Image 1 (spheres, helix red, strand yellow):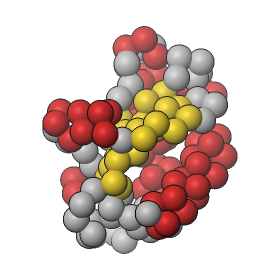
Image 2 (cartoon, rainbow, N blue to C red; image 1 turned 30 degrees about the vertical axis):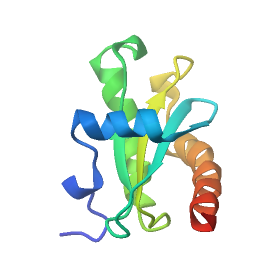
Image 3 (cartoon, rainbow, N blue to C red; image 1 turned 180 degrees about the horizontal axis):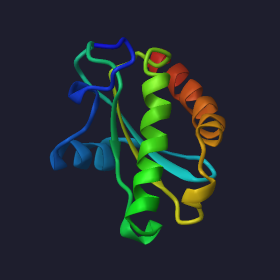
Image 4 (cartoon, helix red, strand yellow; image 1 turned 180 degrees about the vertical axis):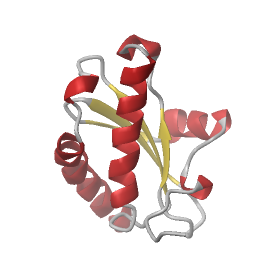
Length: 123
């Protein structure tokens, strides 16, 4: 298996896991996304990602493009943020799926996740 694989251990899969992030996590905002970040108790396992893309974002092709680009960003940068965090990403309505690229996702997520990493390391 590739070093950059994004397997099931790296994903939020169950509704209670999402609910904990929504209720106990901190909200962070970018231009096109809202991130709910919750620190886990266990010190191993690294970053886990959950995606919530509403039908209000458009048809299935548009929703899947958003999920695919966000997942790809986190897959490529998974070792930059090796903290026990659960992150739920919710796109804002102003996001155009056609214009979302990996470069745009990198521009939005990297400064925010760098700040989150510093805050998590300090606490």
